[in-house]
Length: 166
Image (cartoon, rainbow, N blue to C red; front, side, top):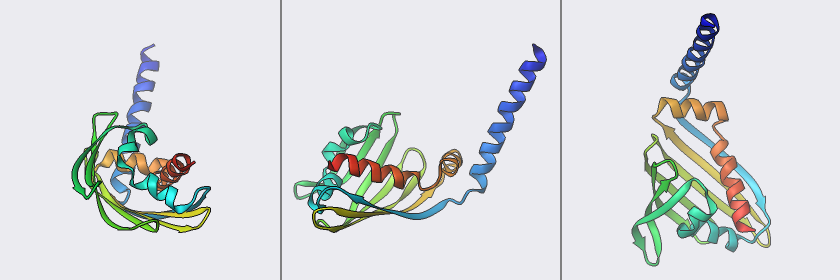
């Protein structure tokens, strides 16, 4: 029994060391993009992207949203409170209605920042391109994102947009 325990402990420690090393050697910065066709017009996709109040409905990991600053009737800067007691501060930095939206992740409780650009084109269907330029200061998060695939956020973003636009 003692040998089994030592073996299990050694295996767990080895996995933890490998995980930490992956995080240390993984690049802090990432740039990538994904493009997809959405079966909805650009105006509908735009409405999904700019409806900050609906974020908790469309994203299960967002518990609630707190608007910090408005630009007219819409949120310019907000905090997304996550279901794991974390937070993400976003700011809308550029927009061309139904064409382009740039959001900046100003700060997060998990050590990630960056800019996400959404470009829309089409008429009845929308071609959406999501571009991510991010930095991850947190070694464990860098390890997790590297092992999942650094484009995991982009893939998830496309899925969420597609589902919410239907």
